[in-house]
Image (cartoon, rainbow, N blue to C red; front, side, top):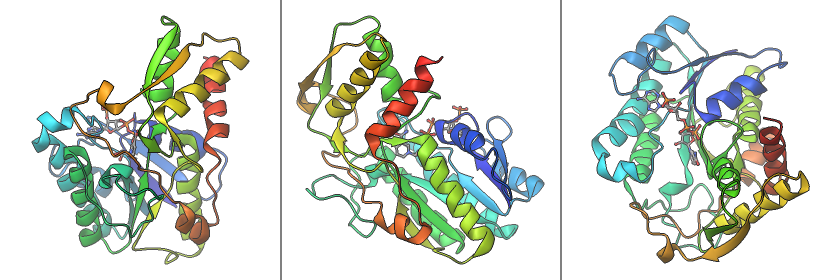
Length: 294
Ligand SMILES: NC(=O)c1ccc[n+]([C@@H]2O[C@H](COP(=O)([O-])OP(=O)(O)OC[C@H]3O[C@@H](n4cnc5c(N)ncnc54)[C@H](OP(=O)(O)O)[C@@H]3O)[C@@H](O)[C@H]2O)c1
């Protein structure tokens, strides 16, 4: 199966490129800007037409949650309109599409982990644009899956784990928000889950198609809990570590509101594709190890 991944330099695309190594039956081509620019109508269709994949994973997105509040036009162009165009272009070459979406489609008022069918109600432009992207993908290509993930970190790009490790090199104390809960997700684990989907579709092309899945690290914590875990892993490796103090969201105002609870329940994916995401702490240790090794 030939897979085209958009957003070649992003955390997820780079993780997919790494994790596909050694898997027989899957060939992966990652394409990024300027060759495939979702801001430009027709750009994705041209790349998909040239590469003729059997599966497209749309990992590219406008991911700057706060900036999106001041640039809704571009956020909706990339996360909504272009997502629909990618799905339609995939359909034209008989390819399935996996659209990567987000926990920020929820408002976070529930006290329970979110299942796929839970009502959506995004709090900001980023979440609204990603939610519209989901709908456009569903409408454009029946051979789709929507995969919502959350709190993504990896050895690549910029993310919360790398930010905490960098901050600990220059500061003794880090103040981190405690009243937002979620499911930290290693992009490497998410890549493994997506590749398991692709392998399943190699043998059973209709398995679990046309559905929405949550795929996030097992367990839950707050940003404070995640930061403490990162620091503890740093200490074990004699890397610079800081003391972490809990603060409230109101002490750390951001342009876009965040859901207070966006823990995702990944059981549906686990059952359909026989893949369990690792417990979040284990994966933090793996990524800190990678970053420690440089
Ligand atoms: N990061 C998270 O915490 C998180 C949480 C939930 C869901 N997600 C979703 O997971 C997916 C992967 O996220 P990630 O963490 O891998 O994101 P990322 O590291 O921010 O990468 C996003 C990629 O999208 C590309 N991109 C942005 N605008 C583009 C455009 N106009 N045309 C083509 N590519 C463009 C970027 O390209 P450049 O390198 O050229 O800028 C970048 O490579 C996204 O769909 C995101 O919405 C992420």
